[in-house]
Length: 285
Image 1 (cartoon, rainbow, N blue to C red):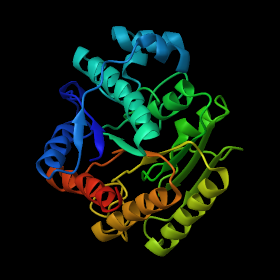
Image 2 (cartoon, rainbow, N blue to C red):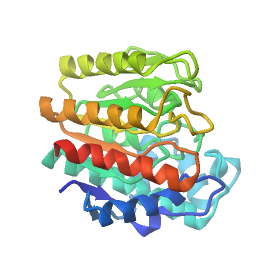
Image 3 (cartoon, rainbow, N blue to C red):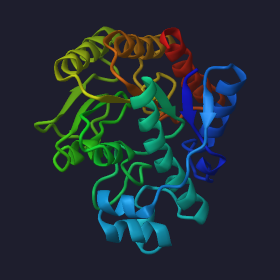
Image 4 (cartoon, rainbow, N blue to C red):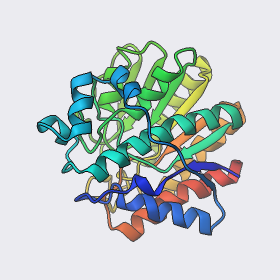
């Protein structure tokens, strides 16, 4: 059974569904026997001080200055502990995936975080974190959130073992670099055929690079019912996207870990979409 990292500490009150959804997804996948939950420890803040500017990490930990709120959430001790638990889950999920071939972290809030500050509901870049903690492993990010992974793109300039391929409908300031490639699919004039072509391009890069681990951002803010979504991206297309990713990783025998990433529509519908990612994974694992 797929192992998914989760802790009740992942939850904190926010003005979005970003963290509220996590506990409901965890409950649903257990009820449907789609994954086995494993609980991570809080990450050691010293590890985060190696990834991000130490003054930013300290400001967040202590709730001081505007840096503590740069992610877009009101700071609280609960938020602090949730973020530390989620980052601990990132490292545990990476370890599991490398050993067993697949894992998940029932978490969000990574790819907009820069070295010196957070943003876009992302506090610390848990994607870059994996690359930092496994410097001898090649980490390939397949980012299918609706927003471009701008923070991860910037971290590819700091971490030579990190490669970012992001498919988006909203650039969110994401830039292309030597080890970061973005593909834009128009939210209204695009199509899933164009999206699938971009996905296949990502697969070809993975096949050529043969990374040690793929981190898959299975974002749901691309869905047509999401306020940020693409009009042509229905539920069947989302499931098809996820199925293609897991089928590819399984066939190529490349370890993969996935995270929930963004999603802002009505909570019951959003939870169903995230659960469908686990259903897609269970087709092949």
